[in-house]
Length: 596
Image (cartoon, rainbow, N blue to C red; front, side):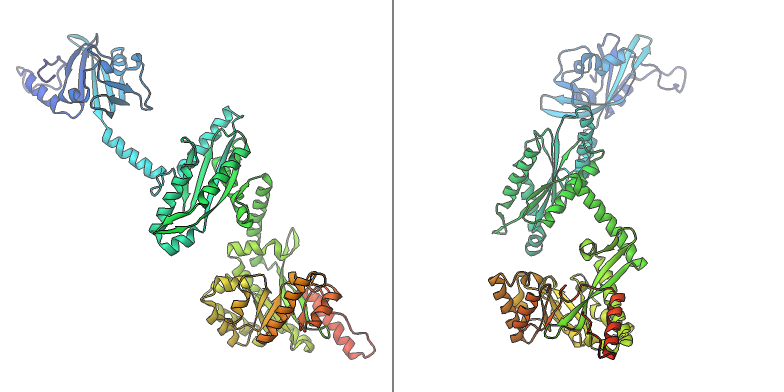
């Protein structure tokens, strides 16, 4: 206490003169001025000295630290908030001859209730009066609160307060370590992606979007047990780590509960909005060596739902990893293919149905893969679309088709009026210099614009409905003809025919198949042809494979067709052989006319 006699701890420095005496009041004032608590006890643990900071920090005395005295009004815990045994209390350890170096402890004070973090430093003392112990305690509660705040910011999402990706990865790693000691434990990782969130965020504003994410977090938490880890990984993506699940069906049951909960309306800006959720599930943890692998597989399962929108959830299996690995390798190889000139064009003849004479071709891309052989578009176009490689690939197709057609026109005069149709993707129409790039290719190859037909899917029109009209008008002004590919498969077919400057419809093969046996299909086909005639558009029928298809299309006054009945897509060498044969037969009146 402040008035207590100071135990003679020894000279702190050489006195200025031999006769100088220790000024007890000066030492007392200095010790009481210190912010750290200072405690001195004798060999039996009896209190010899405390300063003002010690009395303020330790209500009820030093008994709680292992010294003598009445029971204290606080409990001493270790840094993990576990109570210390009597033998581990700091004063007892120091009296036993140990040195304590800035050890962190927690004081839980009962009245008034509060918790204090302290660092404790202690050392035994040997003095002229016998053995003693010195203990100093520093209150680091403020620093700890700041540290906790920084940790919360580092490991929690600031918007929702949920654990973030870093903390989730730490808990996944802990789960994997736990599985090594308890291999029978089953767990599941659920990855949740919100559908239509971007549209809501764009239309109602970012503040409404933030409020929606907070509400989603609350709604997800309501479906979970208190100790289940729910994390927000960023954007509109959440994750749930389920520990000790009974079976995979328990994870699926939770996924269905979550899907149903998210499907309920949200109220934002005084209106109802609706979301949907896609959920990828990866069961574990025994199959995984790292948290990253576990999260990757949940993401692969989630991607499967994007390809199958009727699904709400999908459970990962090893075959998906094989598909993902193949997809990644295909992307890498495709980038190399564009550099190493591995792409090829095949040309499928388009014929006039009345006389079956070739009037043009559709250019179809192939990939001569160095190890996998000749690949069809279905094996790589979707990857090109997803990665943006469709843009350089599309420009290559257009340039190569124009170059080849110009070359053939020089070599085979009979092809002077043949046209070539080339598909252009939605991503190409996102390019600001689209029209200029087309003009450059025509100029570089020498191909005339009025023999080029650009095929556009309905998806292009839907994606760019507001901006594409002017672009299409500029393309048409060059003399290029515009075709709607796969007509009838989109939802806005009739509406856009009046808005966009098309020259031709290509009827999707699904309307041709079994049209001779399906009266409803035949009616639709007839209506499409009449619509085209009324609008002044040409019609090309895809997928003509039988003579009955051919006869029906002729009866419906459809002008043009392509399909296996006439010819499969042909390599440039096969086209040249066919045209050479036609030339020969035209010079020999006795020769039989060649087939397309």
